[in-house]
Amino acid sequence: MDTTAAESRHLSTYVDRPAQQVYDYASDPSHLPAWAPGLGSSVEEVDGKWIVDSPMGRVEVAFAPRNEFGVLDHTVALPSGETFYNPMRVTVHGSGCEVVFTLRRQPELSDEEFARDADAVSADLVALKRVMESTD
Image (cartoon, rainbow, N blue to C red):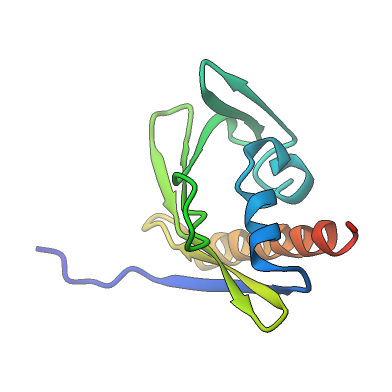
């Protein structure tokens, strides 16, 4: 049994909007290109599945079912069939909320690649903050 702990980074941003509003927006896959350009530039629903044109090719993104806890966990299935599980949460923080994404390091990633992934996720969280705080 492998007892080596996998490395994770919890990346977060504070958004000056109610948690429910941020959750409602971010949980709609059609909004992904506006706040997660690191994942992909366009998205379409095909036979009930959300397909994103990403730098890795066409990937399928599936969010956890809507819930009252702000859970935005999602999977990203690559064209190779490999699937990655991504924990994500929106939690109440004062009058706004905190959005937390847990980035899990894949065993084959170098330190530089993992840092690049962290930077991309952080940029997406900043984009979500910018989009949400610019809406009325």
